Image 1 (tube, rainbow, N blue to C red):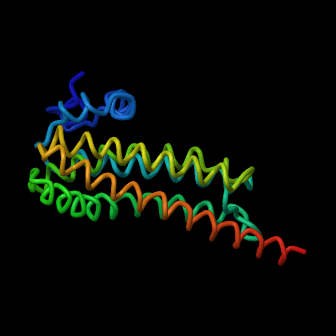
Image 2: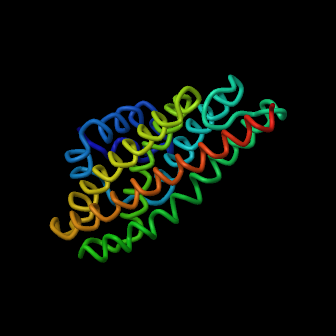
Length: 212
C-alpha cells in the first residue's frame, strides 16, 4: 500500500478515505507502513491529520462525559466538561504534533537517524493514530479503573512498537540503539501507568466520599 495517498492532490483537497485506509495500515502493519511513509510534501497534511485524530479523540471524550462513564465525567457541570475536553483535545493534538516531533527528532538523533524536522513531524502525525484509539477505550475506566489502566498501558506499549518501526524504517536509525531507547521508554511508560492508576484510584475515593 502506498502511504503517499493522504498528501494533497493537485486540486489541494485532502483524501479522507485514504486517511482511513492509511490509519488502519499504520496500526495493523506498522513495519511496512513506516517503510513506505513519505517524508516530504509540506506540513499541511500532517497538521490536518493531527487535527482529525484530535477531533475524533475529543468526540469520544465528549461522548463518555455525556454518558457519565470513564475515569472522569462531567459531574455537576454536565456536558460542559466534555465540550472543553473536545476543544482541548484538538488544541492538544496540534501542540503535541510539534512537541512530539522535537522529542522524536532527539530520539532519532540519539539513534543516528534522520534529524530532518519535516520527516519527524510526519512520523509523529502518523503515530498519533493511537490518540482516538486510546480515547475510544476510555469508557472502560468507568467500570474498572484497574482494567482501564492496563488497557491504557497496553496501548502505550503498542505505540512504542509503532515508534520502534518508525524510527528504524522511516528515519533510518540504528536498530540496536532504538531497541535500548524503546526498552527504557517502555519501563517509564509502565511506571507512569501505575502512578496514574494510583492517582485515579485516590481521586475516585475522594469523589465518592464527597458525594456521601
